[in-house]
Length: 234
View 1 (cartoon, one colour):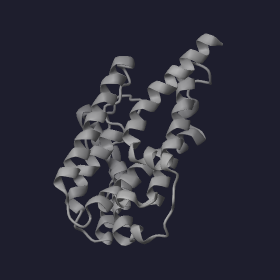
View 2: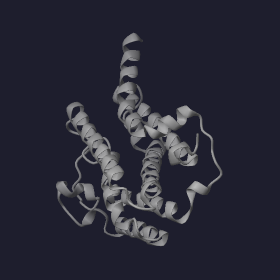
View 3: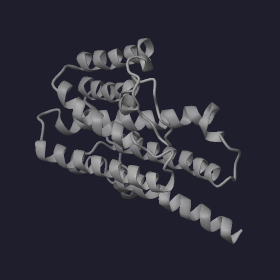
View 4: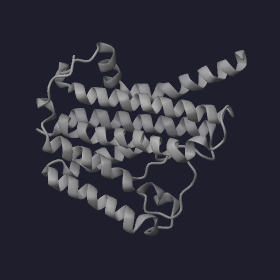
């Protein structure tokens, strides 16, 4: 169903598409880790652009979701539960990647970025759409002008404004990645997405969208396990 429990089918579909893109990219990245495709394949060219588009879509949709869920009045209990889930999942990703790749572990990846943006988003939740969009444009302008020239500390790399950044498998600093979150908020404020024509999705797709965080956490171990098994059987 597209509107069960207040859901918007178009957002569910977009989230499932983003998840599919994520699985495709990570499958290619895992093949690279196992040495089955050329080293550096996913770090440049079309693959690098694809990765940014997928990540940006997740952040953008998270901004939309914040306004859809709390635009009529912040529900602290629901927001806190979701925020703590994202923070916990981000911590698990950091621990798992540190255990497997200590020199390139994920210290501020997409989940960390979404958690921070969700916290910052509370400060602009009552702004009109143009205020949210203007704030997002300011983040982009900050990225294009100052960029990584404000700080020189690895501890501030997460801001996106430090010239010192340690290697990471997944790095999405606040600048510029806060911008798509704010633009998503602006779209949800400007357009009544619940008034769009109903989109009736199969129950399986709605389930995937509802459990997108779990899918994110589980898909990589599954992909790595499948590739490892295939290499052993092959």
